[in-house]
Length: 358
Image 1 (cartoon, rainbow, N blue to C red):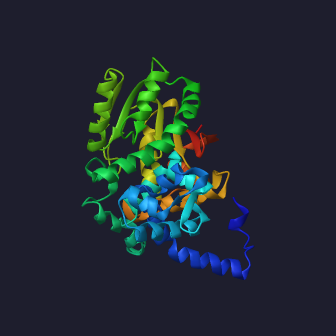
Image 2 (cartoon, helix red, strand yellow):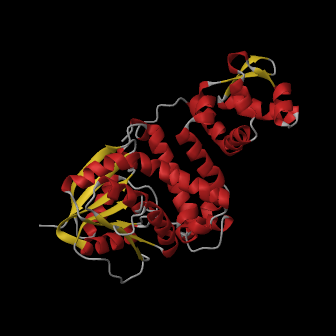
Image 3 (cartoon, one colour):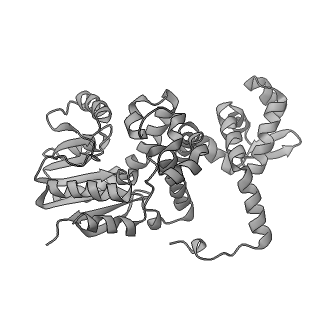
């Protein structure tokens, strides 16, 4: 846990200044996005240390000098650009990350294209424990039923955000899971099949069943067929929130990656209970999550706390990024035992390894 969550060290002036800046965060975020998407920041970057005038940027981007200067003045306060001389700008270090850093771009596009309008309904979502903001994207009971039907830009940004974090963790996760050499695996919430495809390439003997909603299974089957892996990866269409259902039994491994954070505590226990029933006596259930209390720095934790608001306003209204102690509690309520927790799986993930009691 970070000290700043326990100690209030800011002076009164610092606290007031931070509160005032918070008031304008939404406006300044939109300015930063516009600087990227209109090409303003790229032209500043191309000019290097010499800088470039607002007039030259206006001509190059085809927008008014007034508009360029309005955005760049916001960029000054944000720390994205610096002044060389009046009306001439160069790129700041933060601006370079905002313009080119893969992780920052994925975060920003996700917030802008998927979350921004929906979070206007956050207060309603908190009160009702329902995804009140989802109506900004479509008419579904939760976002998972609508993933395959999202507007094109939102869909692209959603999957880019989701895959960026899972992809960087997968190489490390393979070593954790295949240390026990499983031959059969359920990939619950397998989405487009990325993890399953990595598994069958990693181990020539493993066979995997992806468990997900029909729309996700359809997308996964396309990828599986393209990869020529239909003999080793199958799909099982199932809404895991249904009260009674049966999964394939006796598997060596049950895998859930960035999945349980999509559900409420009661739903997590329900899903884990069914996962437990699918295990062989010596099988293991693996939960890969970005537990906010296991992060090395406060910025990572800040981003995870922000992501929880997406789950509240848009995803389903009653889930979030959990801390590891809460997840351990839910595992035990489902009748499983936490064998170990492997931290620093990639940059942000942990893997909670669970087994049957006894």
